[in-house]
Length: 631
Image 1 (cartoon, rainbow, N blue to C red):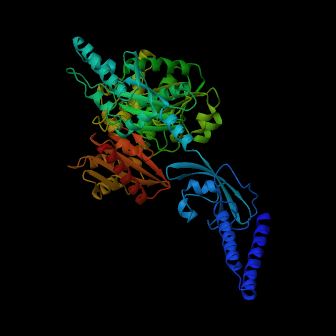
Image 2: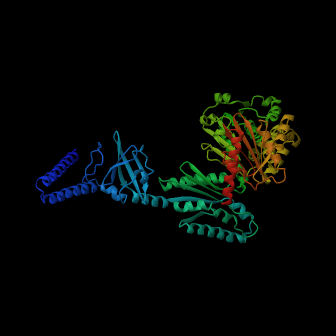
Image 3: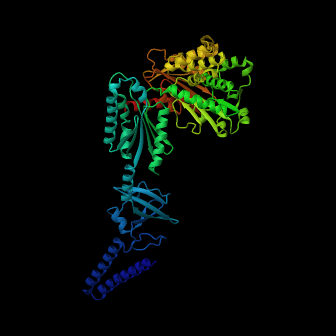
């Protein structure tokens, strides 16, 4: 208000001086006119100079009460981002007269009371105060703080645990004289790897290492896709199986202890997914690298014996056992359930199998079971299971490790005793409160794992021929008649079941299709199209997941097809069955769609999705897979 009165007074004085000039000139014709004009010019110049240097800083009246000299830059703009008012520090900040606030600060958001903006090479926190028409912006420079924060972030210590996946198997296949050479080469590669990042590495067991390095170096490793995995795999000192490495990296702002906890969780998940890969865990987020080689056995016989003893003890401590698999159960899932039932039955414990519904893939097996009085009451639905379960009930989950995939997820929330048996590569959303987990991605099927355990019970458990048939059917379907994901233990398990009454002819009859299903499979194969150079894609006209899987298997019999993908639509969900010979890792492709499985056999489920949308998502996942392979 004072500035306004001062300007009015100054204007009146200038007007009076002007009138006086004319009066003197007309009346006296005096030389005083020159002096008066000079004085008038001096006043005008002084007024302009004061306006430019902030003595008079207000270009437009506003309601903000500001001191004349504030220790930081500030400006006032209107709702159209037009600059109304600023101080000398603001002018100095932008290095000259502002022409357009909108062009100077295009990222400024009028809706935010505090925000960070970047101007040239500097960073500012901008605080905004509002009145009815205008906005006051105060600028606080944070460039130095931001630089320090970035340096601290880059230098943050990252904890990594490195495990040689198959060290025991390698040394068994290696001449003793060559073992020191192999060990020295592995240690040399890992030490060079650590030195290249400015990190430190320490060996705390014969096959385990601790690595510390900075997060800045981690970004470089991500770009190179962790080449150390390939370097270790290529080490050779003679005839032996390749050495593979798994790495779990933990990142946590709170403490090194928390970072170590994340590293342990990451390496455990990496091993659960088959090894030969890197997992990074930051908070609840996981990043995956590698995992392109096949799964390998890790002291399978010893583990099977230990798990068998633990399972027998847990069943002995409970009065009731519930066993369930994944939704839309297949023969591997149902066969494993029958195997657990056989164990519980032998030691006199009540056992029920929880099924959401009987799919076409298991209908013939269930029909055979229903022909026997003993099995008529063992299958129950979700509602019946929830009515009987309590905290002391033992819940055994087979052929899946993801809660959302189970036939009745609510059982996992009620029971305090949960056991998991699975052979699929581990996902991040696994059941983490189980008291016993037997998870082996090297295994061909869950039925193989259950059969391994039954072998170690000896005479305690005697399988009935129908139970042996169910277990053999599960192994057969998951190995595609012993052609995929098959190892020595697989054949040993099949031989054990054969000795206990399993019959391959009876098992083959379980796979018979009716005419409608066979025609649907044939139609899917006939209508298949090639996507990319060596991948076949088709849609199964039947709503049977089993038929789609069989069509995917048949497509691999076509010359030039290295991978196949067949979709079917069921209950507003698109099911994708993926198959390959191993050159293309379909498991990684399916993981990008939220699914999983193995290198050669995998699948995914896309809810609330059309077939066309599923095909587009599949193509995007394949493109992403090939981009990663090229890198």
